[in-house]
Length: 63
View (cartoon, helix red, strand yellow):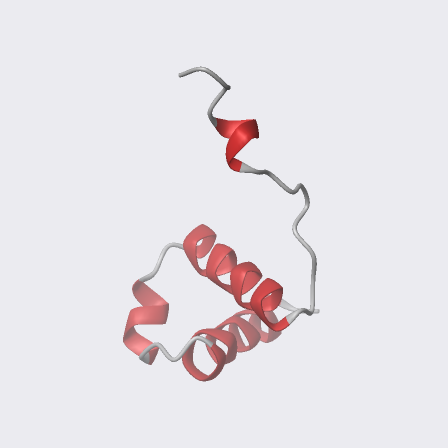
């Protein structure tokens, strides 16, 4: 896939799927856009999280 196709696809994801304006998508950091897209895919059930965490994994017992 060429760079032009990649940016067109990311622009489509940002505007249509994530409901952002075209200007907002162009000014958004690429990592943030990819994170939003991954969250959207998980919400729709198209992908699964890399690692499942619970609150007990984040905050140790007894604090």
